[in-house]
Length: 234
Ligand SMILES: NC(=O)c1ccc[n+]([C@@H]2O[C@H](COP(=O)([O-])OP(=O)(O)OC[C@H]3O[C@@H](n4cnc5c(N)ncnc54)[C@H](OP(=O)(O)O)[C@@H]3O)[C@@H](O)[C@H]2O)c1
Image (cartoon, rainbow, N blue to C red):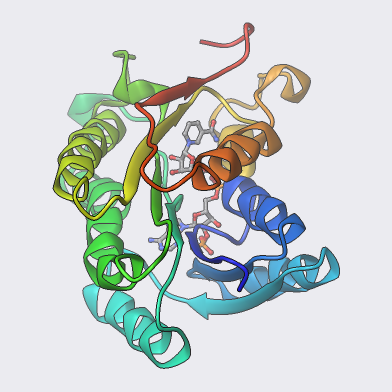
């Protein structure tokens, strides 16, 4: 049976690239995001590329909606093989302009979201012959940049979460790996830094290839944190 993968943030950008790469392997992909129309469009691309896709609209920071996803997965599958926590939002704002609502929003989406997704789906991952959780962080988790303290807190928190969960799931031989991309050629970056030359940004397909390679490692083999960036933008 071909692997079954759940990808959050799958409607565009890196999540879409991961879905299309997995489709090349003939995987079944469950596409999660808040905007159903975007997910359905990616689902059509996945099908055309040789995979099969289910589009499921959910906000990963909402435990009731993640529970809805878990319930659907439980009725459709007796296991899943790969969870890619890719959904995220940027927040470029100095500390003194960061109000409580903005702080809560970025922490909820970028940190609570992966927690809820892992908690919901680890039981199904434990039934896999070769389970993987790949968390998408950012280079900000490894190096301090100004004007992004809330976003950085969310991603650094996710780094610690990833390390602890990796240790917790060692015995079950589920690899839990953090990928920390530098600036990527996706809609998030186009909005954040419109002056950056897209040709000099890391392509989401490169990150997607790494995600695919990690998930294809033999059972019992895992990896440390991975930083991927171009030479051009720090
Ligand atoms: N772009 C960069 O330069 C860069 C660099 C380093 C790390 N990253 C990280 O890489 C990941 C992917 O980013 P990207 O560049 O592909 O961003 P993107 O183009 O903005 O796509 C993000 C996706 O996440 C979904 N999403 C956002 N909040 C969500 C929520 N609460 N629940 C479910 N889905 C949600 C969005 O869809 P809906 O709005 O329809 O939900 C969208 O499809 C993010 O975690 C980001 O922090 C990006």
